[in-house]
Image (cartoon, rainbow, N blue to C red; front, side):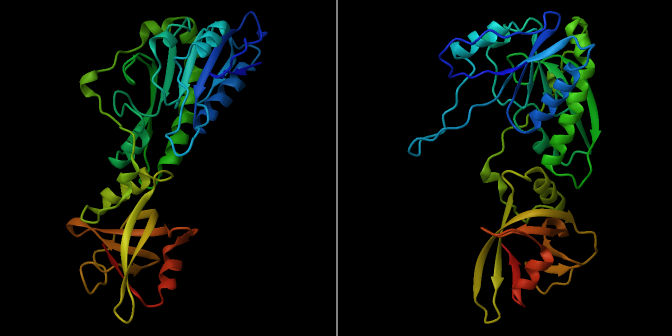
Length: 332
């Protein structure tokens, strides 16, 4: 039996019945990937030999908007929430992409502390967007870390980690999902050592001098600038896939010479591998073997394979090119 804790609850929490010989565990997670962790915990806890049970799950409350005001969120520092959590007497809390910095009075509640599944090889890429920033940097490998939570952002001692190779076509949502699957396996494997206290003793402090940051992505970053090299732009498209996406402005030149600007969302790309691209001018966008080829910095070219116009569905580059009906396309 598990319960979703609600910060707004004003009435007392009814008493919950748990198995007396199993340790209560609380999971905190917000986006869809946290459900991967929940599934793994529920499956493991259902084993007859399991030493724990999922006592509660905690999610971010839905955003509220009132006459255009900024969305309001309920924080973990509210007394009602902390009172409910204390009543559960959790041995351990687990966070998986929860998105809130936990205050000390929360961290003091679970007897064995709080552990976090973080989708990077800490101390690299601490912060809100580790997967996106790693892909943006074009890393060839990344990973997932299981670490104790401290007040400093993603800076706690590391219990265990696992390295994952990064394919040059994988996008952020797919890599994030993969890393949380790996992280769930890592958590289940390490739970016995966490419960018996040996993980706390053997956890390795992070080398803070090697820490890098992965700040939250803003929508203003989504524009592609074609004086950068094609590989940089390709990595950005992969990194920003899902949200906020990547956008570009192009110029459509009609047969009578009239010009209009078109905004498009760039969905799928690859770095152009051919030596040359047929073009009359430096800013011309060519169509080669099913791809729109954008000239980029240092003589490189980016192939756009899929794109999306405002209010339209995602289409292939070939379908978009055919729709131009002989009009020219130039980058801006």
